[in-house]
Image (spheres, rainbow, N blue to C red):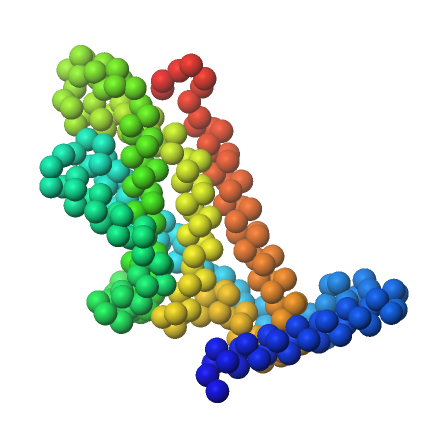
Amino acid sequence: MSAAGSLALAASGSLGALASGAVSAAAHPAASAVWLVGEGADWGFVLRNADYLAGGALLTVGLTAASILLGFLVGFPAGAVEVYGGGLPKRLVGGAGVVLRGTPIVVILLVMYFVIGVPQVNLGVASISPAVSAGILGLGLRSAAYQSQIFRATLASVDDGQLEAGRSVGLSRFEAIRYVVVPQALRRSIPGFQNEFTIVLKDTSIVFAIGLAELLTRGADLFTQRTTAVLEVILFISAIYFVLTFATNRALDYLGTRYAIPEGESV
């Protein structure tokens, strides 16, 4: 039987056990509170393997951070080209963005890993495996396609008079964009960037397709070993995702408030 078939059987068996537990809890109201939070033995199994899940969480965080950074390094210039560029560069950037946004992320990852064949990257003190490199490139380029639209919109939202004011004090067009428009656009992009960060964090779960054992994949490994612990494992990894997402959103909320452009002002 395939791994997917085994996982489906394990999950269905566990759901059957949960359904039986629900009937039992309805017949014995005193036991209902216990059923709602799972079985003590299964929670013990999850906690004994918390270090295994923590390793997956670290990989998830690393993939998210690297992919968001790559997405920014590619997406911001791409957004600027769409606003201020013209001719062939603008058409190429726009076309690449349409293709990346219209392609499922799992397809992008499979192409990166199996078709393009991203090599291992040696950093001296450590090395990045081909699967991790493919994951970062796939997630990063997909994020870049979306970030380019965030930055395109925020760059275009800065009044043209700001660019003209920069030119009037002796700045070149490039300098006026860099020193006058870009700082305002970056501050306005924080809310959209916050959403993109959350999306990339959750999209890291797709890297199981190229063999990476991130948080969700490790959770699946655990409840395949102990089919009665599906609920407990899912609740545990959901709590980890919630903590990561909540902490990130609160940090970006603070930055958004701290650097927000006051009402009625341009800078």
